[in-house]
Image: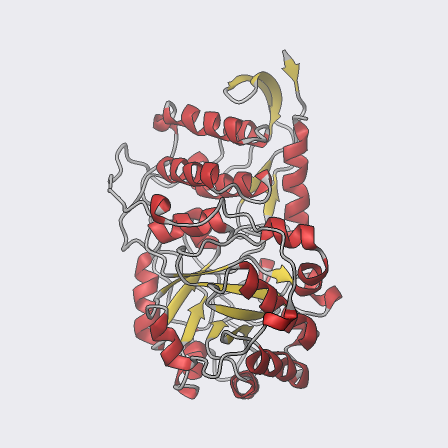
Length: 459
């Protein structure tokens, strides 16, 4: 018998983990991934939603077999700058938007989470456009091994924007060219991340921590607009001051951004302070720049939110991040897909297009099964002890025989409310209601470290 003393981590969002404190009791259970193990279960009481014993089965179009290309991993790329020719005419604004199918459902850029396999899964369930994970421009430019491993792209995958954080215009442009070349000239656009609020972004001076530097933002976008063969786009957060936000938008658009994605929260609205995204400000921005497509990001946890946001703000598309991780079928029109079935589909795709690291797979399974598992930490321990594709598959297959103990019905969310600011222009003092991907305690760096410790527990 293998004896383990584990500290359990409950994955709650793409960037946070809740650590249950205090050991309550021990338990021995058969782990289908590794056999028998004894572990300490940490219990945190949680309000349960009512469950039913049925779900709606649907047939989806499996696009996996129709996607052409290699295994999805990049090939060694030799830079030949003599072949870099900027086309005489380059589509922009709504001409560009129409050329990629006028998408309405968008997969957000998520570090180590919007990889090829997950993008395919989301496309199979109604997503129209996807972003790559955010890549650090200096690392992407200088580290060929990192670039080859992490830049995964298939020519027939569908429209994809490659996103980079950057604070040097030359480096940003070079990354744009590399992405263009590594995708065999198929990447749709190059996106500048101006919204990352994490502490590591502050230390590295990128993301939302350069949003006050209008000159730098302008130079980054303008150089890319002039020197890249595809459109440049930008993803921003808002300021608390609406007038300053509109001036910021003017800077981004005048620099040459052809699509603008607006996360309707300020830089400080993250973690414990992550309140409702401000759809009213997104609506004002939509009206302020009618010449380019605008994507709304924030408060999209169910399909009704997609419809409400499109109608209320007038934007061209809606993006989802953390809720999409919990429900990759969020964009499929409101039809509930069994989470175990979603895990099966994701693992099938991973077998053909392996993610850069196995930790990607574990995080996705944690997200999708977070609500079904609830407080049953012995299931979390089993997944925590799995660290390869065979064990992930065994775990999911094991859960198929435990359905009566899981919460597999559709979550009962309340649609997101329409949010406006008060006359004094203060941040909104409200938090989203409903279950699903709950807000929890750790930032992205701490969450990654915690998940790594989970993966290493059984080694």
